[in-house]
Structures are given as C-alpha cells and as structure tokens.
Length: 141
Image (cartoon, rainbow, N blue to C red):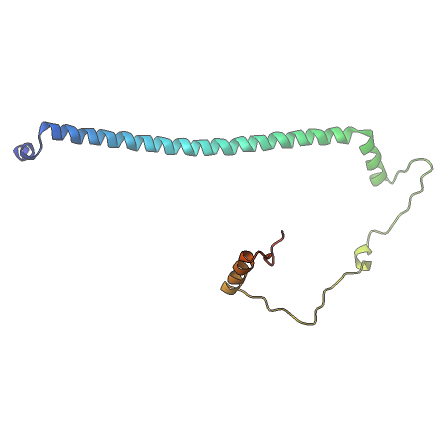
C-alpha cells in the first residue's frame, strides 16, 4: 500500500498536502477567533450602552432628589396634599368626579362609508400612493 502511495505521491506532493492542511487549520482557527471576538464586541457594546443608560438614570434621580429638597416643591406638595394656602389666598374646590362625563365628545358621523382595501390590494395601493408622492393612509408623517 505504501508503494502505491509512493507511486502517485512524491515527497513534494506530500509536503504540499501537509502545508495545505496546516493552512486550512490556521484559517479555520482564525475564523473561529474572529467570530468569537465579534460576539464579544457586540456583548461589550450592549453592556456599555446599558451602563451609560444606568448612569444617566442615576443622574436623573439625583436631579429629582435635589428638586424634591427645594422649598418650591415643598410648597407645591403642601398645597396639593394638605390643602394648604398662603395667607390671603382663597381655596376653591372643584369636584373631581363627573368632569369627564360632562365634557362633550365629538363623534364623526359620515353619511357614506369608505371601503378599505385589505390584503395584497392595500399593499398595491400603498405602493402606488408612495410612488406618486402622496401620503400613505394610516401613516403619521
């Protein structure tokens, strides 16, 4: 069997095959390392964004604490929670319940109903309106 191999492969051919195998292994390991580094970089970016968000939330809470310590907030809180007023002010109490029931609501009533396309027809109509430069119904621009 070795004689058959020696018949078809010389030392240079075996050396070339060995070099190709080594190059393939090195390439494979390089690609796996690149993939691992990419996933680690994505994880690092996500965690960095979360840390930055938490820092901003922390700063926002500090500002809120400072605001809650001010005399202006204490005055507003006393007025709201304890119904306190400054000397010379008159308090007017309005009913809380029933305000929504008394407010008039506007209902749009139209004599004719417009048929709305659904499915693929709605898609075709939306594309046609988009290509003609018209606003697409249902989209807020």
